[in-house]
Length: 71
Image 1 (tube, rainbow, N blue to C red):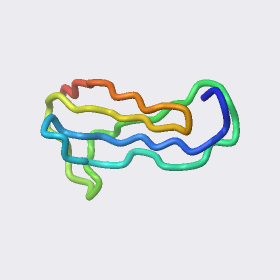
Image 2 (cartoon, rainbow, N blue to C red):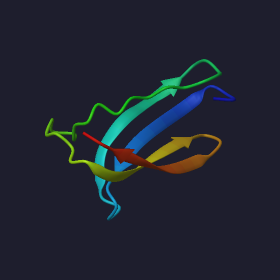
Image 3 (cartoon, rainbow, N blue to C red):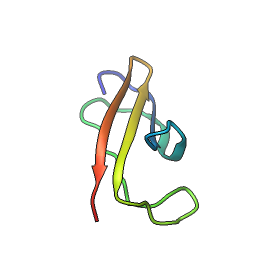
Image 4 (cartoon, rainbow, N blue to C red):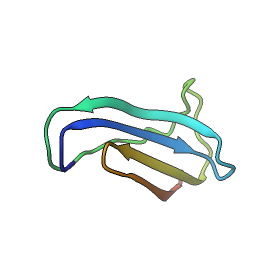
């Protein structure tokens, strides 16, 4: 994070459906930001192996990256 502010990390399937919001909070510091995917949906069900997308939204930008979950 270059500046303090809100950060939201969301996980989507390949169809673009929201699977889970991993983090949504105000960060007061600057520097590296770490969020973890624990392999579960929002209701606690295990995620299947496959391709997902992680979208990180901050006050400055929106970044989407493809991730592969292997079990």
